[in-house]
Amino acid sequence: MKKEQKHETDYIRKYQEEGYTANFLFENGCLLDSETKYAYKPEEIFIVAHHRYEGMSDPDDMSILYIIETGDQKKGTHLIGYGPTADLEEAEFFKDIPEENYSVNADVQKLT
Image (cartoon, rainbow, N blue to C red):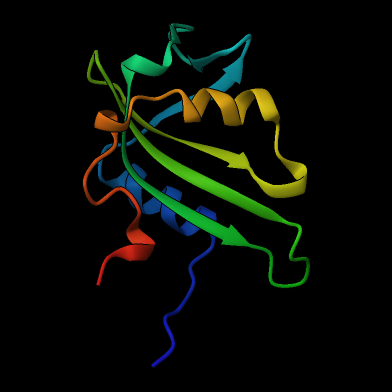
């Protein structure tokens, strides 16, 4: 049986219902809480889960939705492009998040 692929907005809504309501923006090399304007460094970010997407009509339309908790207990989401449309500085920020800050089950595509 083929798995149904949900759209990013479906997952964002689902996580918002679970309390992941903070919106994070990437700005000046940091992940910024859009409400408090606090700028988080990679070591302050914990990845609970991430979902990868490819556009059905355009394979170059690729994104990753990160489900995030911070060291000060903020919970939210952040969507980034990857592949040809990626912001390299933003991609490097996520690569700099320590491996131990990723949940064991962060890659939901690998869960069985």
